[in-house]
Image (cartoon, rainbow, N blue to C red; front, side, top):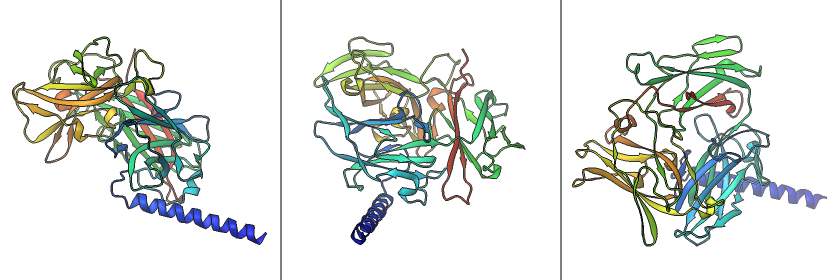
Length: 429
């Protein structure tokens, strides 16, 4: 009996030691960012969604039958073992001061065991995927979770990170989208008014923290919003300044589902060994003129090969050639192609370069077959600010998808709870 007890103590100490070692390695790795990020150059097409709907955000109810699916591709044919872990974070995406065993059951580090080699593709790759929660690890508490992948048993060799959300609902949310009535954004602003109704008496109004996102973007999110009125269990958020977003414009699109048919917006499809190439029509700025109605994916993308039911491993990779016409090269900043496919990051490979002879900004991207929304963004070199409206324009009629997160940040608790969310749009049939 004493021997068994001592063995259990030794195992527990070993586990705690490994857990502290893993966190130390991850947190001291300056490359780890608590955001959606790919760190390795040979990793492509990072996606996270609800398992039953590829276009849904990676948000599920805690302790439910719902699952989140995360997937990505490793270019090439050389298999690599990858490990993953989950890190609980506060409402501002700082790591929580918790032991792993306090926020998850199961193992702190697990292996990505589900993978598929590409079939019938010119570009060779290995597709990895996993669903959360699973038999190896399951969140115990609500909140923000960072999913981190690294080479097996080596946290210093980061592969990717992705934000996931587990909700324990304690509020109900009602929303309204209005045109802004302020002087500066009267024509092209959208004001998000919303009410929160507390359904759990343990939630104090003063401990509620709210964040609002437009189309999944983080660069223009509204955080730490304050209610304008309190009425019993209801918090009313109506602010003519803090709750206002630029409406922007509908996204441009690229259809690469099939190389056999030339879709609208593509000037030429050709094969140049070893890959197919899609040469898009030349794009032009849309910041002048009238708004034009067009249904889009609000910046999202999906993977699809037209002739396949297993696009995750049958979809090929193609080169897409983008051209944006401008009379002159722009000073004081750079032009990028951005969308959910870039995790809303201004990636070095998505930077465009000016072709003086053609008077176009040009870029070539290596993308998996599918359907993509994208936009052109100007980044000011001095201020580092993004300008979505510089090329795309800003129209109040634009249909956008908004996401509200509600947190309980009670300082008496040792973590921030995610107690509500809502996804909604201003689209009307």
